[in-house]
Image (cartoon, rainbow, N blue to C red; front, side):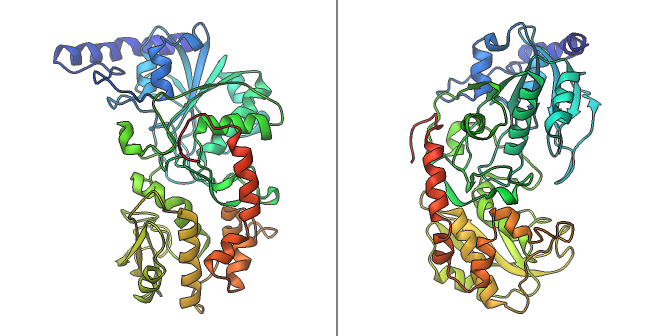
Length: 427
């Protein structure tokens, strides 16, 4: 069935490619500009798909599986006889990105390629292994743009898919992509096992400073219940301190509330406001950069700027979210600007924002309470991976004292992380 699906797409896609070439437009999948940098999928294609030749292949991906010419890898592969692509597996938000946060697209046949698309969101273990078996694939590829934060769920889709591939006896291939906030170093608290959820399965730091290929190696060696037959197709020309804009890749929203690279830099810190009663900017055009609540006034921006946090600046801002928290209600707050990416520490910045908000507005500031999980009721604990951040802030500790509370665990994670780094540059 997979062979028929992929070949059916060949006629229509090839026709488009041929027509484009006749008008002087390069065919999909072809980048006429010489580049030193290549993603894992570009390396795979340049090598004529030899790694997966003769195997029925599926791919876990979403709209970020992009090529430099704006073509999508699935559309290109479905029309290429050198690879037998028979299935696509969609994560949160779906393969084509049609679903909002906390949603997926379900099973369907993709209109563009004729390929079956299986829904993997929130599926784990044997249930996910059964989907892989039912799809008929021999090899599962993974290619999704991560944003570098532990609570961004695609890395746990990677983890769950590796676990399920091992159970199903399938080969697993990671097509590596950049960490868009660079891979210079790791930041923030390390998750503890008792707070394992889909926004943090295992013990890594809040900003991990790794690529998905490096994480896959770490997961396989340190955390999987059984090892998987893993291959990482490495990027060419990427270094740990390379800015995303310098790769030449277009930025594709990995999820609806991640519109820019600037958003990704702020996210490992300001996403912690999901664990409070302040808006984290969902429902605005600058999510995770605009933070506020109806009770916030100009004093917050003044207090934050007085801290002179490295690489960060704050502007007094007013906004009205169109959905999520405080919908259709005017909020006062700040817009965070990353003024210098090199020294900017997203987690320390986010902690400073939490500490000052609670100090300035003690009667209004509140932690978000999850009534569905009475054993772990505070959402901030799930985001930070333990009770330490919340209890330290409640005790009146300053940002440096809060940071000191995770220093030992972060040092241990950094030592583990170093064993699985592939690319040079940074720490």
